[in-house]
Image (cartoon, rainbow, N blue to C red):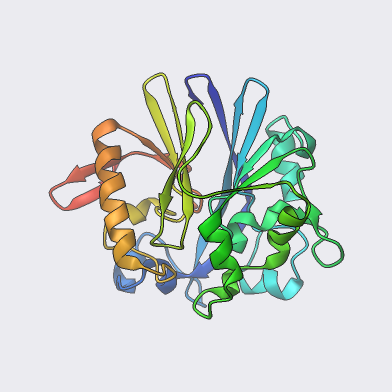
Length: 277
């Protein structure tokens, strides 16, 4: 698809599964299982979908997926389904390659969002995209390094510390703009300093919603992940952003929805829902 001068290409980096209860928090299973049927281990299917933005001489990648080189145990726990070379496969299908990526924006540092940022994890991890700058939020990096018991299992230092060591990471503190038409919105409910990426041109807006709205079903305001550190903050952020998006006709890009890559939101008497529901 195109947003004005920006060419946007979804990149499918595989599928995995997470616990359905964790994905919907206090929402009873009887409600969410009708949309997302769980397996025998109560896990639901999730996409690993990233976004390539092409404009002039820049090729911008938003998030990098699960990551190559994970252990067999790790892959089994999350039922990862994808080729052993999924990054190159997806980039080749989009007509590009690792060395042509100029910028990588990491929405946050959980392993399913930044795992593909480095390679050769067990030996000498190094940046996956040799000619790219990587963009990280300062508060997110500090939190990843805090080793907080609540969510430390989501952070694997080999995914992001080599970027710092190699001098290819740019650490921003708050909203910033990569170039005219590509900026960020900072959210703190899921994790401190998560940066959503907004693309705007020619009267159109696309929002890469990351884990604020990972699935289209998360348009429902109370449907908030148990993974979120501050669910009430997430609720407030969703209400604010979804209100503006519904009024202005924004397109949402879903990183984890297994059924759709994009969609719009509308406000009904019962609250926010996907525009085609």
